[in-house]
Length: 57
Picture (cartoon, rainbow, N blue to C red):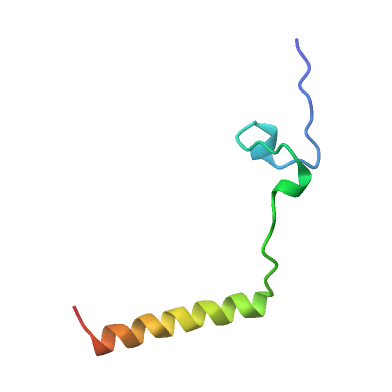
């Protein structure tokens, strides 16, 4: 029986070949504070609610 490689520490999508990276620096991440993400989400929700109240469909 053939032995399978263990992909320890790898993302399953990378191990399956679904995502391919040619260089490590190719992927740039947006660094966002969790508090900022929550505040942006709440702001967007409030903006949508206000727009729905001011201009209902």
